[in-house]
Image 1 (tube, rainbow, N blue to C red):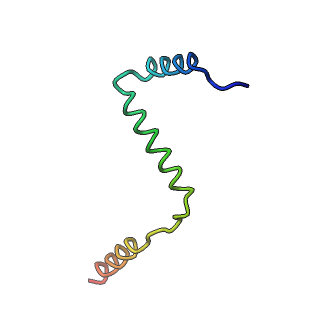
Image 2: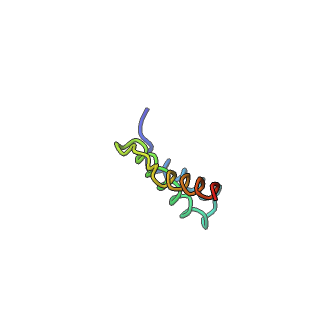
Image 3: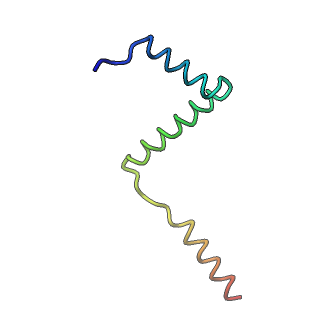
Length: 67
């Protein structure tokens, strides 16, 4: 199989513009970029989960229940 050529690329962009609409095309690009960024972030080495905020919330709920 060969790569997508210039003409095929133009046809794909034209069809996407017809389906989505020209006014929503920037929003589509923005959401696609955000999705790719989050996907890459998920695969990076930063797999730590911040549990300190949840711990403080749980502690606050316990204090309210005791009162």
